[in-house]
Image 1 (cartoon, rainbow, N blue to C red):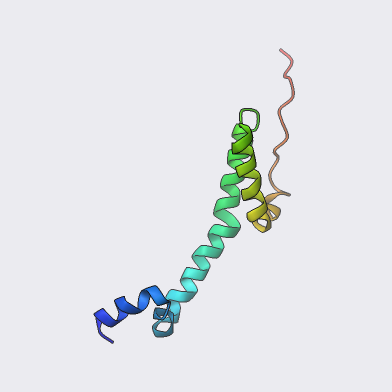
Image 2 (image 1 turned 90 degrees about the horizontal axis):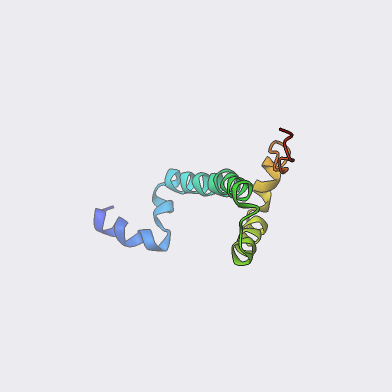
Length: 89
């Protein structure tokens, strides 16, 4: 298959029929981002900005939490997002 025909088939997703490794690796990358990368970023973002978020930012973050809920559930038992209490000095 020539290079021109491969380039023409890429937008239609037909390149996976030529090389299934590309398709499987794309699924692995997207699945890893969905289950690991974005939920960990959301936990980090919420932990750092919980008290200073505006209403639209909070609404957007809650929407992302809903969208990436399976990944959030994976990490929820291992992460502690409780607020630090008033430290006695």
